[in-house]
Image 1 (cartoon, rainbow, N blue to C red):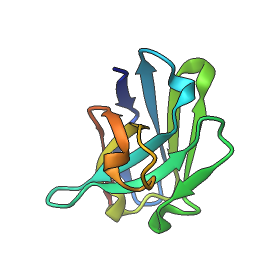
Image 2 (image 1 turned 180 degrees about the vertical axis):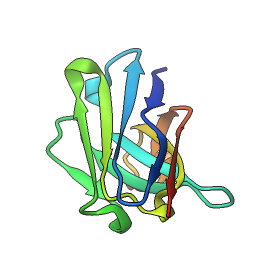
Image 3 (image 1 turned 30 degrees about the vertical axis):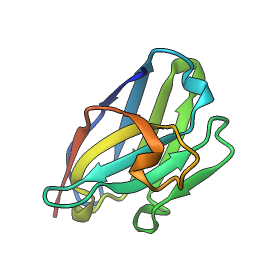
Image 4 (image 1 turned 90 degrees about the horizontal axis):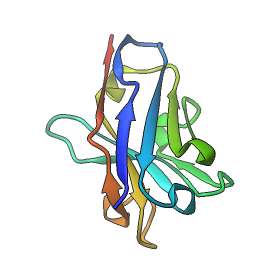
Amino acid sequence: QVQLVESGGGSVQAGGSLRLSCAASGRTFSSYAMGWFRQAPGKEREFVAHINWSSTSTYYTDSVKGRFTISRDNAKNTAYLQMNNLKPEDTALYYCARRYSSGIYSNPRAYDSWGQGTQVTVSP
């Protein structure tokens, strides 16, 4: 029911930074937890970060802890992923998603709405 559109991807050198945005249209953005996932060619979709509706709880996959920060602005219906100290292994198509079920936050099946993805490419 909700539409999600990611933006902010691009090509950077290792050590650089990007901030991804996820703009939502539709109903009741602020009532849902949000997540970021990524997928590289030939790889499974991987959980990156999660934030609850009130921004009081966040989770990250181990490989991005200390480098990435998830946030949201409910008044703007937008979620963000600040990515610092990027590494070549961060190269992937990044998706934002809206949480739906009560399943584990790292499982893609716990989310019911997905954006089209934004490409992040990190060169050595």
